[in-house]
Amino acid sequence: MHDTPSLNLSPSIGAGKGINPDIAKKYAGKTACVIGAGFGGMALAIRLQSAGIMTTVVEKRDKPGGRAYFWEKDGFTFDAGPTVITDPPCLKELWELTGHDIADDVELMKVHPFYRLNWPDGTNFDYSNDEEELNAEIAKLNPDDVVGYQRFLEYSAEVFEEGYVKLGHKPFLDFKSMLKAAPALVKKRAWRSVYDLVSSYIKDDRLREAFSFHTLLVGGSPMKTSSIYALIHKLEKDGGVWWARGGTNRLIAGMVRHFERLGGTMRLADGVKEVHTLGTKATEVETESGWKQRFDAVASNADIMHSYKDLLGNSERGKKYTKSLNRKSYSPSLFVVHFGLEGAWPGIAHHMILFGPRYKGLVDDIYKHGVLPQDFSIYLHHPTVTDPSMAPAGKSTFYALVPVAHMGKMPVDWDQVGPKLEKAILDEIGRRLIPDIHDRIVTKFSYAPKDFKQDLNAHMGSAFSLEPVLWQSAYLRGHNRDDVIDNFYLVGAGTHPGAGIPGVVGSAKATAGLVLEDLAIKATA
Image (tube, rainbow, N blue to C red):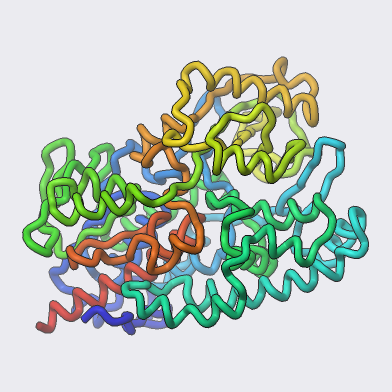
């Protein structure tokens, strides 16, 4: 019953558009609840509803999206994040399951360059998948590293095949499954960090930063995260970097529209209070409003610690696994400044990384020491250069993000620290890009670790859940199906394969396969 699922919901399952009647017949009368309307939760809900399982999504906040929430203020649209869309096929597949086209609900736009990297001395580096352009950019900094980059890319392609294509959508439910994957990981020397790997091919310090910073976008330290994560480069090279017109929130809105088109139910602004259990079964979902409903399967896209400590807190399983989760390491949090400016800025790329004077030392301060450094690196998001609809005419939308230690490592008073850090970040952007930034600000607000904790039930304000290190990967991460409560499932950043849009959408594919297999077996039992 608990082997790797073989049920195939391919795009060719039915003629025309809609739920395939043969598959729907298999799941007639079956119900599922997905807790949390983030990318992982919505992707799972679409997959279950596409099979004819009557699925209800329950969301605490007033709008769907989870970490992909958004605000509208003074005519500006501010995405909470994420802002980098890669691997469009993993998203398109959610529509193709029932013969639909993602383009009916979402317009995806190419972003070029993918990122503009900037150092304090004024050096710029445009990173894209145009081979000629990229080689020229590398040669500007160190001609000898052009060959080294090609060797790095070959490694990236190899681990992409092993770590993403073969394992990214596969649930790891027992240690045996981990052992099967081990030879490939050993062959690729997965115990090395991304930074060590990059450094073995690339000699220029700036280029080492350029080709290792990606792990920070999924909550991992370049100095600790497994070299398997080098696969991100192959993912971006082949699939590009994209933007959804109107913001990442429009991609979520399109997923909701498609889910409801198939007959799914959304329940917003009513957080789950408890998942009731009886023995090894999740029996009922109860919300803060008092609403209760029984389901055949319950899946949580909520923070993994919140799922076990709070939602399953009255069960023995919840209490026991919470102790295990307390011993794990969690990714840092973020401090984000959202701001709208007067004027258009065609010279500022859609995605920029403003590196600070330190790299390894700064990462150590965040991940090891839990201190708030005086210097920082900034991810600057400027969507209006691609999509002017994100701001009123003649104005621009931005957000500036800096990683900070989570609240367990750095328990500061963000009401006191936040305004000072906000000013320091804006001052740095002013010094390097927009000299009169303070005079041009139309509106601004910040989002701190305490907000991640309050709004998203994120453990210690962590922005990406469990830290993506080798000893918290695959079987050693949260399982897509609980080991004890056999109709309780996990989806999202806390389970395999991890954070980021392709990661959580991949987790939904793995989890959906388990739910479909389990309910199909119960239907014929």
